[in-house]
Figure 1 (spheres, rainbow, N blue to C red):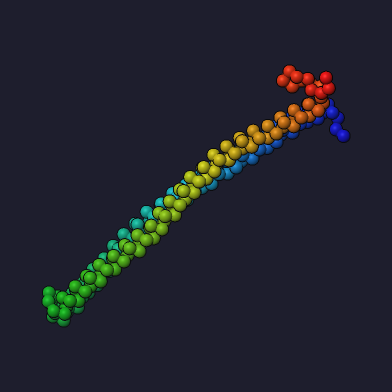
Figure 2: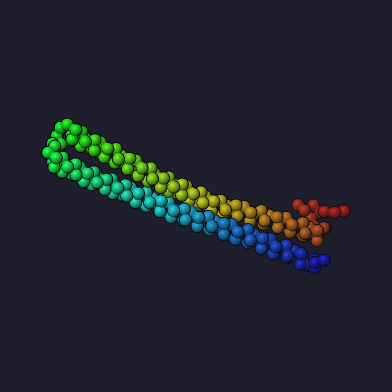
Length: 182
């Protein structure tokens, strides 16, 4: 059996150590959540940058397509001129009109696909920002929970301390009235 003179100090020490452990655990949990928030914010920033790069790549792809179409139309003109055909009317004019129409359809498709890819990056960035907010909330919750857990530990220790103290001194009074036989 433990020395009765050590029971009360050990109860106090145990309560203090438990409270410190709970507090440290809450602080570590909050720190981890804050780190996760920073990582999510960085990921959101990278996703936004990827969306901007995708938009620029889409514009570059459309410009390259316009250049290829211009080269094709130049070849059509040279071929028509070499054969003595005018591009202003008839089948040759239809070919030029069809080339313009197909080029517009292709550019529309290029921009739609680029928009969809860019939108995917923007959605990911939004999800990362939401994750950062959730992690920050989790950090606050860890601290609040830790404070309550520390308080609960302190109250539990105080209750145990008072029971042990009462058991050591059974004839003490409570609220001015003696306890025990009169």
